Amino acid sequence: MKSVTKRSLALAGTALVFIAGLIGVRNARGSDHADTPQIAASPGTDITDVFVFPSATNSNNVVLAMCVSPLIPTGGTRAFDPTVLYQFKIDNTGDKVEDLVIQARFEGTGTSQKVIIAGPTAPSRTGTMSDALIPSTVTGTFNSAFSPSSGMQVFAGVREDPFFFDLEQFFTILPDRATPISGTAVALADANTPKAGTWRAAGVAKDFLIGYNLLAIVVELPKSALKGSADGKIGVWCTTSK
Image 1 (cartoon, rainbow, N blue to C red):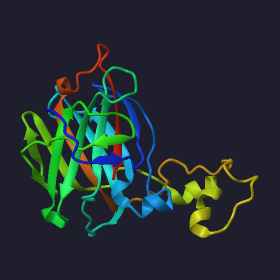
Image 2: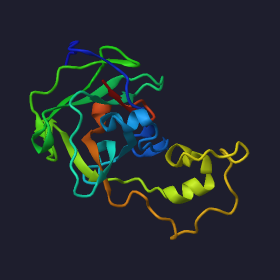
Image 3: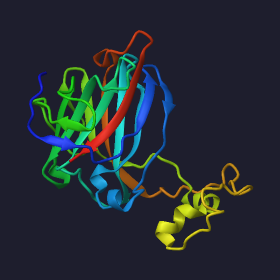
């Protein structure tokens, strides 16, 4: 699949990096939920988590998942931002530069939104600028699984937020983090200093995100399509661009 420059897109969202073997995740970094006023004002660009894991139904497949647009109340509705390019970037040579990309774009709004997939294919350029690539002629619809190419399955729609986070206790341990919300400044001596003895016991923690959904882009495809290195490792990160 060859690429064509339809439009140039500057990096807008956060990128969460995973170094994963095709057998399982080896190293991962954390989650982001509306962490700045700028990203909160543009939920379609807000990446909360990235997951890479073996398929539960086919040992030859791997699943990539990108979670965005968090804090949707149960029963609420929200579609993907049609002005955003969503990308999985895959490094299969170990140089921390993307060798392949899988792109998702969306047209329309609401439950009739069209899902457009390109890749996996080599990007026309790497780094913080991206080009929209020629997509598959097979498109899908919001909240429904489809196959844009042989052996590849894609779902893009609403899912329960999988991230567990005890926000109340987090603010107890690191009180300065609540300042943007409460407007109450914390003394410098207290800022960024975890408070001893404030960790909740197992089974007592409260998941702040219960009752909240988000939007997920989930791609299952053969491991061979990602062409991992001899040791089976790949690096996967995600970006949102406008």
